[in-house]
Amino acid sequence: MRYFLELSYNGQQYHGWQNQPNAISVQEVLEKALSTLLRTETQIMGAGRTDSGVHAKQMFAHFDVNIAIETAILKHKLNSFLPNDIAIKDIFLVVDEAHARFDATQRSYEYWLVQEKNPFFNKYAHFIKADLDVDAMNKAAAELLNYKDFQCFSKSNTDVKTYICDVKRAAWICEGELLVFHITADRFLRNMVRAIVGTLLDVGIGKISLEEVTEIIKSKDRSNAGASVPAHGLYLTEVVYPNSIKKINE
Image (cartoon, rainbow, N blue to C red; front, side):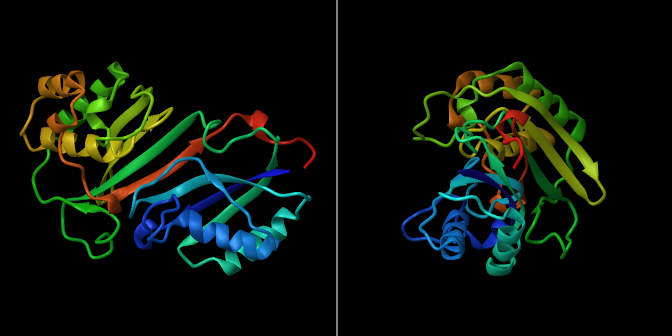
């Protein structure tokens, strides 16, 4: 039987989502907790991979068990067992072929900026003191919707089969003391959002023009795009699935 976990986590203490040999990951902590509580070795598959230090307001993963489980009880036990920086929000039964990564139809991220020193956002938003032309940044962000190939924003030497992504939304919004970049697409490349934000900040400070952003995208060359912004300001905020993955009469 296959179940989905919905969770959130503060990525500050983790070297990303995915298991790695010499560093602690969110996946490793979750698998150890599930294996202990279910009394059998349990592996999970996440909706995607967040990099070291990146946070998730909403993430999904699936796991398989041989017998039906009481989801409310397991949720309570997991939240008691897990560290305070990982929270289980829901557990639900899905059809056997449902896949947390491949069945996701849409993903959304936010990147948080602050432009004045703020001790409460010190570890959770990127501080940039420069004056920013937000209108120009939004015009450049809108340009992303006109293209599909985003190799220029992908981490180099990544073993992906395609650089094609369907970006459905890209916009900067002032939210109180925060300037937040919102982006939604069907999929994202490694380091893509942080590279996009770095490039848009170059527009905001007047380093490059809107026309140059277009040329960067067309070049398909990562070295032409802006520097990647720090991970601690990045949040995975939503992963969307078709309703058909849920099993009726759980």
